[in-house]
Length: 220
Image (cartoon, rainbow, N blue to C red; front, side, top):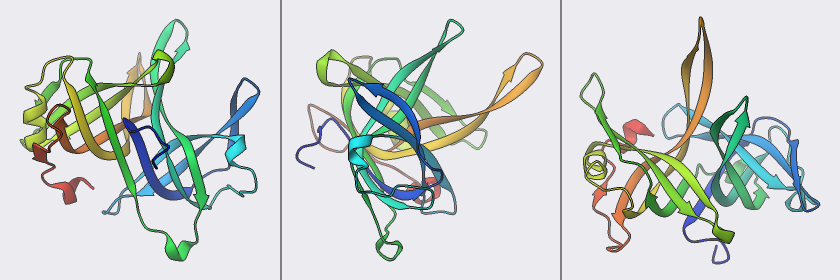
């Protein structure tokens, strides 16, 4: 863990739900993509995209049904098609090991240090639940940044809604998937979005928690 970046760290366990497929190559190094099912404390689960180097798969049999533990980063990139750009998220693997079913424990945690790059969007559900959506810019090596959509609830939502663009924050949460329906002319299309559900947040200058996630059991 000490060798992994401190401003963007993901650790999770889960079950591979489909065999990996070749994704792309960078400087002669091939990368594969698969999806991991991560269970919540409730009966719900998240299916999350994973990107892993072929060099980490040597001597490891990663296929559908395999239980694995992953450490890495949540990264973003822009997918361009038909002159449109769409933000795509993936968990970029730095370490991966297979696990025996008997020792598998549910784990899905992310820690991010970054900056608000858009004004928070605060709203209430029809049932009065408070929600804030933010986009967090997290610095990466070589002058790059990842842009991570995050969602906060209750007291965290109210607090985040007061923060200005450019505020440096530290947050802890879980990576989750969410399906939604997008209208495309006369038809509708079901899509999946990925985001970080925030459980704790603090100003980076303070390094102390200002609000814990309320109703955490209900959300997980």
